[in-house]
Length: 80
Image 1 (cartoon, rainbow, N blue to C red):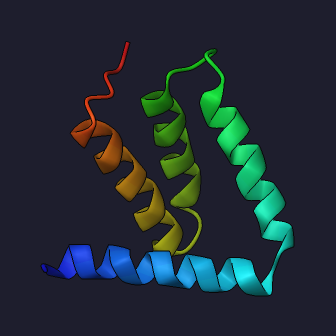
Image 2: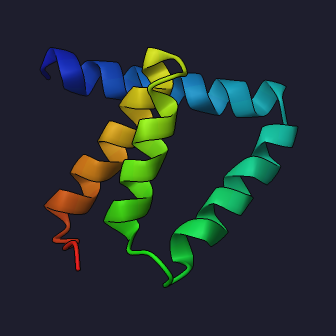
């Protein structure tokens, strides 16, 4: 496993740990999932917005959104 893949796996572990210690973040996660399901903007565009906002946050938040964009690209999500 390469450095980025290992980093992203560690990010998943960190996120699960954070959610277990701060359950109020689960509400934000549920809200985010609802936003991503809306059809007003496509998923790639919403992830790019989230990535842009995350630039002001920690490197782990940026990595989370980069991972989501990469996952979308690999699953064939197209920008309309």
